[in-house]
Image (tube, rainbow over all chains, first blue to last red; front, side, top):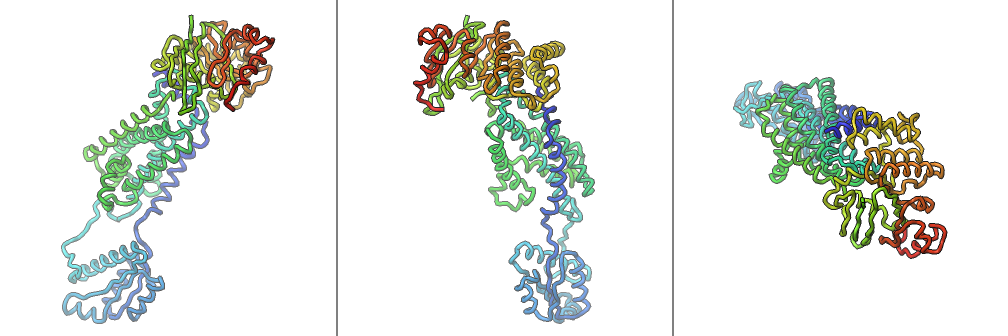
Length: 365
Length: 244
C-alpha cells in the first residue's frame, strides 16, 4: 500500500505537468455538450408544404393557419390544383402536399366529417414520414378543437408526454452525452497513458521492480477515476448552465453510477493497453470497440427499433445501461431501487474489465 | 558463492534462437563483463535474468531464485538499467529518486537521507529540481545507475550503460561502478568498449547467441597471444554470421 502512495504521487505530478490533459478535461465536455445535442436532433423542422385549397372557406383558412403555426412547416406555395403542387414536389421545392377538396366546409357542416389528402415526397424518407405524421396529428388536433369526428378514428386515444412534456430533444440527448463522455475519458485516456509508458520505455524500469501489477494498474486507475468525476461535475454544470437541465432524481445516484462506470471503463482502457504496444494500436482498438458500444447503446438510435438480435447484443453493452440510467435519473427521477439491476450489471462489468486488465498485463514476455 | 547460475539457458523467437544454450556463473561481489557484437543476444540473456523475459528452456537462478517461478523475488534483489534511458523525464531528479526509493520500500527519514546522499555523490545537488528530460545524457546515465542501486541490491544489471557518453563521463561512470562493487554489489555489465572490458574481473564474449569465451581479461589475452582485448574480441566476433 505504501508503494501505491508513491506511484500515485508520481501519476499526479505527471498529470499536473501534462499540458494536454487539462484542456481535454474542460474542452471535450464543453464542445460535445454544446454541439452534439443540436447535431443529433431527430426533430424535423422546415418541412416545405404545398397547399391545394379548393374550398376557399373559413375552415380551410383556419386549418392552414393551424398547420403553419405549428412551427414544423414552411409554406412553399398555395396552388389552385393538385398537379401544380405535384410539380413543386418534383422540382424538390416541397416535401408535402395538403389538399383540401372543394366543399369541405359544407360537408363538415352537414355530415360532421370530411376528407383531406396528404401526399408526401419520400425521396427524403424521414422528412416525408415525419412530415405526414406531424400533419395528421395537427389535423386531428384541429378536429378535436372544432368538435368534429376524427377521421383517423383515433378518438379515445390521446398521448401525453410524461417525462419530457415539451418533447425537447436536448433533454433527452444531454444526459446520454454525459454518459458517452465518461466512456471516452475513462477508456481512451487510461489506455493511451499506459501505452505511452511502454513507448517511452519507462514501464520496463517499473516491471523490473517488485511492484505487483495490480498495484501498478491501481495507480493508473485511481487518477483517471478522479478525472472522470471532475469531468462529470463540469459536464452537469454545463448542462445546467447552457440548457438549464438538472436531474429530477438524485444527483448522488448519478455520481454513484458514474463512480462504478468509470472503474469499468478505465479497466477497459487498461485491458486494451495490455494488448497494445503502440499508442496507434491502442487508439484503433479502443475506437473499434467504442463505435460498437455507442451504436448499440441507444444513445443516438432507439434500441426498441433495432432488430431483435441487435437488441440482444445491447444487453452486453455497459454503455447502454449507463445511458439509460442517466436519462432515467435526469428525466424520470428514478430512484436507486428502480435502478438496482443496472447497478448490478455495471458493477459486473467493472469487475470483469479490471480482471481482464490485471490478467492481460504482463511484467515479462 | 554464486549469485547467478545459468545452465543451457535458451530463448527462441519462432525459428530464431536469440540465446542458444548458454551456461555460466557469476560469484558474489564479482564485476562481470558480458560482451558481444550487436545482435549477439546479450540484452535478451540479461532480460531473462532480470525476470523481464521468460526463457524458452534451460535453467537459471539469480540471487538464489528461479527465473521461471520466482521472478518477483528476483526483482527484490536486483537493480536494472536498460539500454534505453527509462527514468521519468517529466519528473524532477529528486522525484525520480523518491519514486524508486519508495517502490523498494524506503520511506520517511531514510528516503530523505538516501536522496541527499545520492545527489551529493552524483554531484547533482544543484539539479535537484531539474526535470530529468533536460539533463545531459551523461548525467541521466549516472542518475539511472544510482537509482538502480538505491535499494542496495545484491546484483545490478547494466545494459550498455555508457553508450553515447563522452570519455570523461564514462570514466566517472566506472568510478560509480567500482564504488558499488566495493559495497559488495555484484555487477553484471554489457559493453562495446574494450577498455571497459579490462576493468572487469571476468568477461564472457557472446557470438550468435552462444558464449564463445569466458575468463579473466588477462587469461583471454594470453590464450589469444595478444596484449589487448580488442584483438580477442575481433578474433571471436569475426566468426559471427548474424548481421546487425
